[in-house]
Length: 388
Image (cartoon, rainbow, N blue to C red; front, top):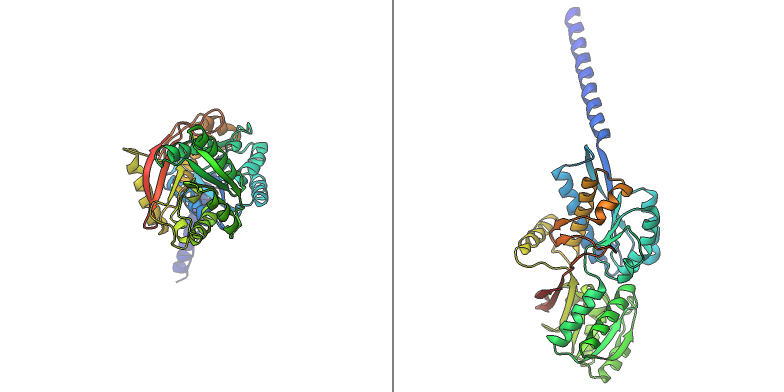
């Protein structure tokens, strides 16, 4: 009996020793696996939160895909971690978030969402030497600052404004255009570039009005615009402002068409207009777009996104996905996730993404950026054309 008990105690002890060895081995594997932290920043609260969540979801899909694939950097297996932050689309909060991420020593940043937040935050990342790729900020000023850490995966407002101006005068045959912007870096920049392109193509700006991105009453602006009898209203700003403006235009008997950039280019604008937006009344453009064989890849991404999150892509999720993937690819090619080591590789990256080829010019702008124009039918976005 005593011998049996001794044997059982020895067996129990052996099991404990083996378990301890297994746990020690697993702990060693975990500690040897490097964690690469990529931050994503956007407005997750406030009037454009649906855009912010859209791009966060895109970045999250990329992180999940990288981890599912299994990535080795410099001979070490790595785990990618998404550090998601909210800047509420507010420039002051954006700089606070940027400093927080710098202090946390993240390996790279995807974002910010708006030009008004991306530009001030970019100065902080540049000082710290942390690469930043914006998936949605289009102001030319972002990459004109001379920061070697600043990149974007979409066309800028110069390209966007030129394409819209050509389409307005050429295809829509608009000659007299009223231009309104919300005084944000994005809205003002886009309206300026559109106006230049319009006038170059022979059109004229018959009214120039300004509002802000928190405004809800546009009756005075609409009344002044109506008096100029425009063929078209161009709005530089976001859905949250454009939707109510369309509703008030309808109330005041002004049924002209509206044109804008990616800020008004999601189905949300129909809801925000109170259902008053007529089919074909709004024409908008977003930076990016694919055609031909590349369309299959984009369609698959959209299907995967809906399966993962239960909702449709808004606009920029695929660009957030590609930005994250391109950054990870630069780390792999450099053999390091250290910002100083992979930054030069990122600047020369050649990556085939779901949104098309990702390569940057000397400023950090996307090379050969495409533009996609849409209208709306039955409250749903409908493709018009892809151009450059």
